[in-house]
Structure formats: C-alpha cells, structure tokens
Image: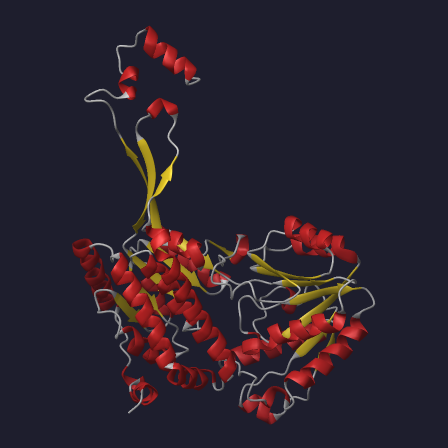
Length: 486
C-alpha cells in the first residue's frame, strides 16, 4: 500500500486533540526541550536533509492529497509551490546553517578592553506554527525548517480544510521526528484558538488579518512573540513605457495560479488612462493561450470550498450592482459550479466602495483602475493599508527606484509577480496591516532564535579596566568618565 493509500485510509482517524490533550502535547515537547536542550548542528542538518528527501519521495502522495482536498489542484502548481520551493528553502538552510549558528564577534569599546563582545544565536525552545489551507505543505514545512535550523521543537496547527494533506504531513514528519520533537495538530477554529493560547516561545501565524488579530490577542496573555504573515490587497502598477501585452501575460499567470488563492497574488491593477480596451484584448488572448479549455483545464485549480466560491461570486455581483463593467473571460456553466472552477474575471473601474476594493479577493478576480501616471498610482496605494507585496512593470530605473522608495510594502517584484516569495535567500513577510516579522533565508533563522549578547571580561590577573570606574571615585575615574562623555 503506498503512502497516499494509507493517507486516504486514515482520513477518518485523524488525531483531533482535545484542549487537555493539546496542553499535554505541549507540555511533553516543552519538557523534552528543557531536558535535552536545542538540537545540535548535526541533528539539525540530518533532520532537514531527511525532510527534503521525504518530500521528494512522497511527491505523488502530496499531489493526490492536495487535489482531493481542493476538489482539483493543478499538478504542476503543487510540484512548484509545495515541493520544489519547500525543498529549496530546506536546502538553503542546510547549506548556510554552519555560518548562521556560528557566534559573531562584535567590536568592543576601548573603555572595556581587553574584554570581548560576541553574539550567540540561541534556540528559543518550543515554537508554534499555524498553517492555512492554501499551501498547506509549504506553509507548514518552510517555517518548520527555519525553526529547526534554529534548534527548536515545534507544534504545527494545520487547517481543517485540508484533512488528506494533514495525514500526509503526519506520515512524513513521523519519519523524521518523535512526538517530543514535533507534533501536528488538527481540528477546527476552537482548537486553533486554544493552540494560539499556549505559552510558546514564538508563534508564527499565516492567514487572514481578522484571524491574525485574534491570534495576536491570545498570544499576548503569555507575552508570546508573534510573527504574522497576513494578506492584503497587493497592487500592480503598469507604466506606459512597459509593453502592456507582456504585463497582462505575467499578471494573468499570477492571478490564476492556485486560482488566485495566494496571499501574495496580485489583487488589483493600476493601469494608464486609456489602456482598458488593450488590457481587455490582451487578457482574453493570454487566457485562451494559458488555458485552452478555460477554467475546466487540468491546469486550473478549484476554489477550496463552496463557501469561498460563493464569496467570490458575491464580490462580482456587488461590483456589478455598483456600476462596474464585468468581463468574465468565459461563460459560467453548471460544470464550473459543480467543480468550483471560477473563471478569470476582470472588473473595470469598480466603485472604491465596492467589496472587491475593500476586501482581500483571494480568487481569480482582478479589478482594473485607470490612473494618470506613477505619482497618482503611488498616492492611491499609500492611501490604503500597507500591502504584503507590490508589483511594478516599468523599463525605467528611475521609476522603479521611486516606487520602491515611496511605497512601504512587505516585498516587491519588478516586471513580474509573486517571484519574491520563491527566493530562498530573501526574507518573506508583511508590514503594517499585512503582518510583521519574516522568515525564509537567514531572517527565518533569526526569527526563531534569540540573539544573545555575551561580554567576556578579560584582564591582567585581578585587574580589569572597568575597576577604574569603581568607587570611591578619584581624579582618574572622573577623567575617564569625562572622556567617555559622561
């Protein structure tokens, strides 16, 4: 029986922890950390490598489980996002781990010589990771890899919307960790609320802003530091100097990837005045090129459940009722509804009071707004909550630098979309309303580490320079204090 068969067979027997069991699981992991301490360099490296190998070996099981959870998940999207990118994050950590773990010398003020300063990365202890449904493997394993690289043990709360993928995660992680090292937790919002209330040494949450606020509030009772990876309305700015047809192609790919169910997906586009008709033509052409069978293509992912499907339809209906022009690039059929395939939809010049301009879309719907140049686009973006990402299409270095400096956003890709997330060396995180803190790369290691400042006193026998500042204060002591600018 292969891994996927075992996963499907076990789907009705998921370990759903009660509140008391969740506390016991946390206590078990915490006690193990207190007894055994952080993982050694060799343990971290070995476990990271084993996770990468198991992801590769279980590729088909992951693909099948995710497709079952979604109704349909494009195979190549799973291979890119859930496997290849996750393995890339692990491999990057493995190759840089020795450098990250090494204590760093810092300069020492002349007044404290011959003492020595250094900063030593230290594991925090037990960290929590709360995983959303849209990329349940990547958004579980990539933070776990960062936490493990830093030497921590971990509890992972997975979404109840991806139960088959949960089984695969349990199967993989059980081959790397015992239950005093990593615990996977299932369950609904009640379990999630209890999970966020545990006294973790750090808690990373990926999800909506509304839930992120609740998580932060729950964590505050324990003074648990939190990294929030939220969503938001990520703008695309297209300038006149960039070929509109190519911009449309790249935006369309990003907006239909995982059916737009990506926190870093383009949310709306700001285009030059008078470019709407060209945008319409290019989008229609590229949609047919990317998906010859439309949304029923095997390369087009389903919306996760009926509730989210209905929410997207409500966004379109609300925009239409408020006067926007709607262009759905194919007819909506019963087959679309049956398989929850939401066709790519353009909304031209929507009312700024419409839901589609106030809420994160999280689906294959793209509002288009005309602006008069870069300055107006920058003003439009800055009048709204700070986005997780911004995408800028321009051939001008001056314009690129101007937008990068003027707009505060979690990340940015120039002349493409979403690619900042796929860089294992780059930090990924939000700012303001799109979250705070970061992981991936060295920043992920630092997020899950305490950077301990260490001063080592050295002297000549019993004498050290600082003793010159001991009372009773004489002329020499006062002179030194004066030279220190005190």
